[in-house]
View 1 (cartoon, rainbow, N blue to C red):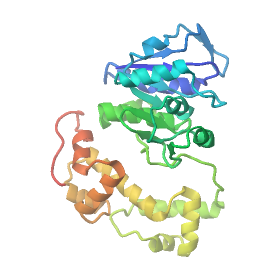
View 2: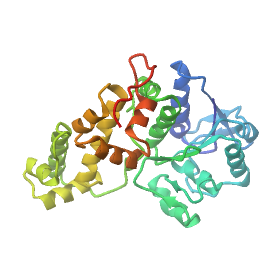
View 3: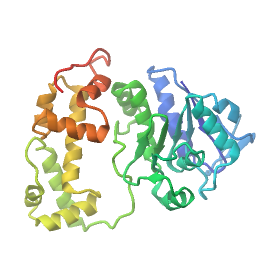
View 4: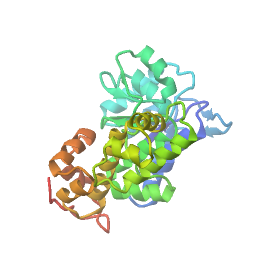
Length: 326
């Protein structure tokens, strides 16, 4: 798979290097024949925000023939994408390429019309600009990345790593993504539905510590009933005060957080264990496979059994997954 990454004047080295780092590691680990290349809009060299000069860039024509085209960021002023860049993205997309807009790189992807009528995400500081330019766009500031299969966008900076790992995961499976993550010493998976970090007033330290303690306590008891009243009681807070402090600290309600943790644990067990799905449902606090399937499908648009068949990792990373359960 050939992956073209757009380089332009004033791009930061971090944004430019993240997709190269993640995707090149696939080849380094022997997981696939993935190659990356930098392309530009015709200038012989570009100068990064840090002052480095990069030359020998491929042209737009070569990018139009890539399997994946990545816009790793965009100009800080949010200027509209020029006709040549828009044409490159639409031509590559029509030819079957996956188009990826990381951080501000979502701007040219949207300008190219590839997300009309669909949801997108970018750095939260660019939401107003993009909303004004494309009022018909469905922008979601509660996620780290959104993958439509043919077009992928991510939130700011560090979530680029999550989005790139997600692409590895979706193409090569959980074992490959985990191996890449371990090699790079980064978290193997933060789901797309995790909120990007937007400025919010931070709670007092004492409340923050209490919330952390309640979360640690709950994570050890996911199989048990965890109503908000019980969580609040563990840190000697009233329910109303606890809910307010929890939302301020995490950006989510206690019920939503518990459901997400249970889904995370269910996904981990589906990937790594031979447990029947009925047992996983009980161990993760869903009570029944039916309830787990409903929650799992609503969140990930795939059933637990389909997820297991796709991502289950045996000891050697190969072989069929168990099919017991629903």
